[in-house]
Image 1: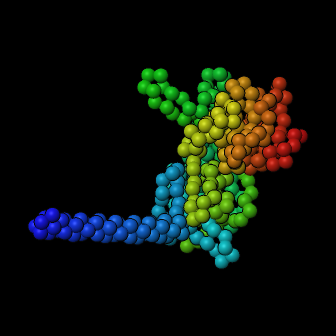
Image 2: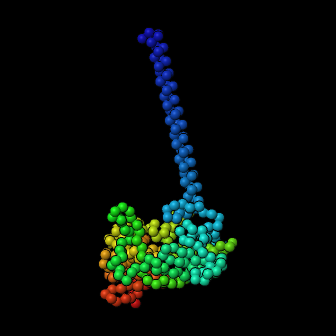
Image 3: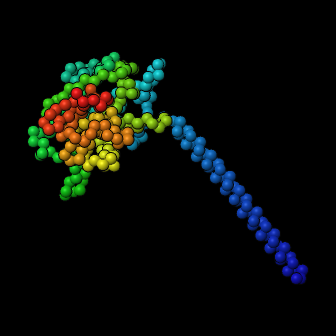
Length: 301
């Protein structure tokens, strides 16, 4: 090897070493950036997890300063007017059927029910509206919870009311309704029953509220997985969702299962079941006999 070739070899080696150093430097920088990025992501996730968030029907909603309050004894309350708006209830001042402009009482209305309440009261009154009541010939009304239009293929939720008369139900709540800063507030723990929704707070700093129509696909799937072909489309029965129960059937007879684990609460043997939310009892019919089943004590009487 002559002198010129030796110089070229040395230059090539130096060039290769320089390239290796450059690549190594780039790799080190990339590794540092990855570590920094992972650290930032971890910090953001931790900060996000520590922040209270609320979801209504799977959509995140802004928690205003007036939406959620906490009393000195630690009891949490939620603004009735604001939550009613989020859930699609109309809000009116004054008690139902006692038409005043008293801001210390109100009633909320949907297509299926009216909920009336007053400040400092430990009771709430619900009126199940008969606008969607079954007719006297039930066979003419589909019992399918979801109907699909044969022409358009569009699916719709088919909910009916059992009673042909406006049913009034008064039920007690553990903590009274409060009037704070000219607004009515309900105890957070009573939200599910008052608004007929499913409340999920199993995840830290996350409040998830789901209305009955939004839950329809989920409860149908749960019933199918538990081996049932039908979910009762009676509105009074769907209100049992707030108490983690679901009325299911096989096309002929009905029973009740738990929404938590799908286990049987009331066996599948009744011709008809109608839930009464205020007493947490089921009115059952079998072979023209009528009875009451108390789901809390699993006792027939």
